[in-house]
Amino acid sequence: MNVHLKAETMHEPHLRAAQPGARILMCAPDHFGVDYVINPWMENQVGRADLKRAREQWENLRRHLGANVSLDFVAPAEGLPDMVFTANAGLAIGDTVAVARFHAKERRPEEDLFRDWFEARGFTIAPWPEDIAFEGAGDALPDRAQPLIWCGHGWRSHARAAEHLADIFDREAVGLKLVDPRFYHLDTCLCPLSGGWLMYYPGAFDEAAREEIAARVPAQRRIEVDEADAMGFACNAVEAGGRVFMNACSPSLQGRLAAAGFQPVVTPLSEFLKSGGGAKCLTLEVQSRAYSEQTARR
Ligand code: ARG
Image (cartoon, rainbow, N blue to C red; front, side):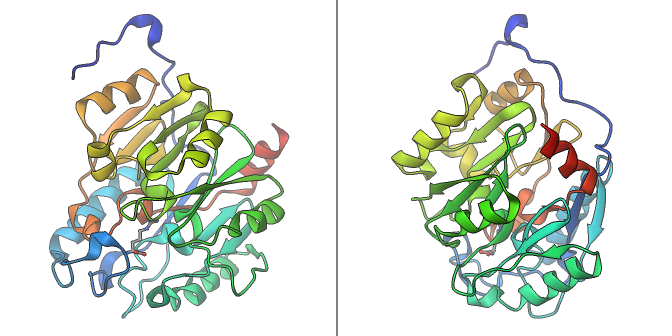
């Protein structure tokens, strides 16, 4: 379907120079591979990721992002093929970080490595209960316009992770139940954008979660994507400098993002999709102090 953009429905572009203080953490795919199955995307993919292509795709994403924000890197570790998905390292806002407590036992050894990285950079590590699974920013996404954290549960993170995040970061945390195993982390089906826009795939959520979203984001600010775009990991997007980087995006969704003032940029990540991850999974926002003060003042 072609979208006709009428002038009065167009929004101000969010395009701007790199956000001062915004930083993104990545991990090079030196040891990436699909070595086990912990989500439906990995089924029948063990040993099948093309590692040379994965490297090219990751470098391409890194190049795009590097032109828009400052990048940080954590050293990859042998035997941890999913460490490339830094979104799951934890949730960092200001100087504080809640480090992941992986539900997937295959990924638990990543916890210490990520914790060391945060500690070495002076972050305060928030205490976290041993028995509450929490897979970081894969399941916890700060809204860009309201002081609230969208929290996913149902597959990987525990429903009670939200209340701990609310305490740690002193803001509302809204729990959203995920019901489709293909969308096992919140960042596979929901993406908060600047200006209070929210791109999401409604089919991944239960009724109560859809109501929570509708109660907090007006219909005109909601960008609902269809199943085909969701399966292409369109919601697994990284916004940087008003651009929205993602694995794939239909012409219709591109039109809607453009009308909302964003510039969609497609950067193919097929080899990482075999592991159940896209652009957002390969990144973690590690925000500066300035950003959090600015947020708190709102
Ligand atoms: N294979 C990884 C896992 O299942 C993919 C993680 C994707 N990360 C994300 N934030 N959605 O844990």
